[in-house]
Length: 345
Length: 69
Image (cartoon, rainbow over all chains, first blue to last red; front, side, top):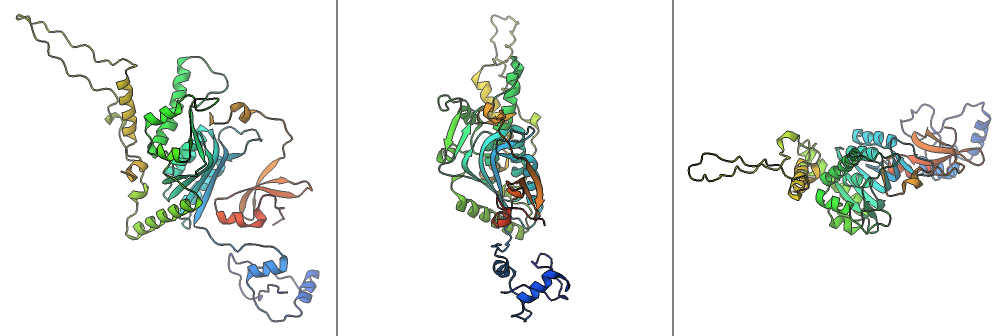
């Protein structure tokens, strides 16, 4: 049997597997001598082969992977620690990992694998924002389910895949606990929902109007309003880029990484095609949110009468559909400069 | 605020089942979630790593007994 022996004077390289050499008086040293009695040649054998033969373990040789994987499973856990029957992905684990992926020069890309039922709105959005602002290529793969707050995480990457059988549920946010029955409650809920809608529509090809339509659709879900999108339906709606699996996702990630490397070689720091730049700043005040005021109407004067009636105040009624559409358009214009939109003109 | 397809009563209800205490620690240079196994030894429950190669290490597989480093 071969036993790995390292000459005492030879320095061990950092990261190289080695066994410590025992002192001559140690009882185990005698056993070692006995074991190597038939083979006095001081030779070095490959560490992994030796480990399998001498220790019976199947330690797989370590090879560095340039692509790292971030699994988002179960509930996305944020500010609230959920009861222990829930399987959770905690943001305190994920966010530092994303920072490490961004910083490590040996990592060329990130694959986000989702099988989540949703979870904390803020934790989900935080992860989604982190993934979206990563300067390295990112690809997501929805397996099983990417529901509720899983949708922004799935669309945050540069390219997204969904398995044929995977589903994504789009439904309104619900309130739990004490609900005060005042209009402000609904406004607050709508504001929370808007954060999710804006992010999803800004990072995918679905429109705000269509996303809201899917969210409030009736008759699809047994206990709720909303829509279930299965595999290719999510692609058809423009939420996800392509139906595919692990092979396609890794191929795309390597392709994006290669494009990035080529661009770097050409001397360009940023790759516009990968959507790496942060969205350009658009002053909110520069975008007119109100419907344009109508032109003053000329009222023909009758018989030399100098009196002219002032045109009525241009105040569109609150339930005017055209006004609502203006707000939608305005919302989308703010997201025109989002990475996803620029990437695919 | 939770945004999930699972009914909130299922998510938030504590079922009162006997729960095994989980510990988060660094083992072999990796972050793992572990628990005390039936024979009193520490076992790996979950590996928290983004490096896919770490998941091929049998010492870090879920259920693997943890030895003192």
